[in-house]
Amino acid sequence: MIITSAEFAKSSEFLDQCPTTGYPEFAFIGRSNVGKSSLINMLVDRRSLAKTSGTPGKTRLMNHFIINEKKKPWYLVDLPGFGYAKISQSERAKWKKMVRTYLEERETLRCTMLLVDIRIEPQKIDLEFAKYLGEDGIPFAIAFTKADRQKPAVLERHLKMFNEAMSENFAEMPNMFVTSAETRLGKDRMLDFIESVINTPMPEKETEEEE
Image: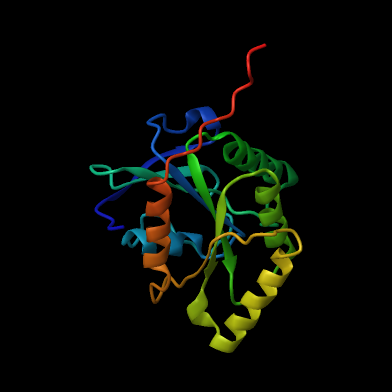
């Protein structure tokens, strides 16, 4: 996939505030400070489409970015991160409700990209979120971030550990991508994957048979 345009569309706090154009959507989510904004900017070839910050928890709304608006448009959706401790319990609960309502009810959501920091060993919070997506039947893929900041042998060990942990709950692994916002590692593979999902017809919803 070639990115010809990428623009901010709107921010939403509630599902009914999200765009109504019906374009396919790909949501990006991960623990706070996982490098989400940097990865988004790398994918779409924009330096500051998604705002990067040294302060975790900066994304507090659902941010829609319209990609390739003039030709086969789709939305990249930047969701608030999870696991950020320095906010109130009520604020954390509000984020969780907002995100889960979107993930579970957004009909145009085609795939959720779960971002995981490959520099560190598998974290319980990432594995639990993946399990939640799987149990709820929410299509997802995993993008390991910051691959340029660790030695290859360590990356390989962490990948193996993550796969072993995932295999406890998944008979079939989701698509996985090793990425780096600095070296652009994984960019083409991720964009090709997104394009293939867009080009795959969505399955028709099952309807109850009339008695």
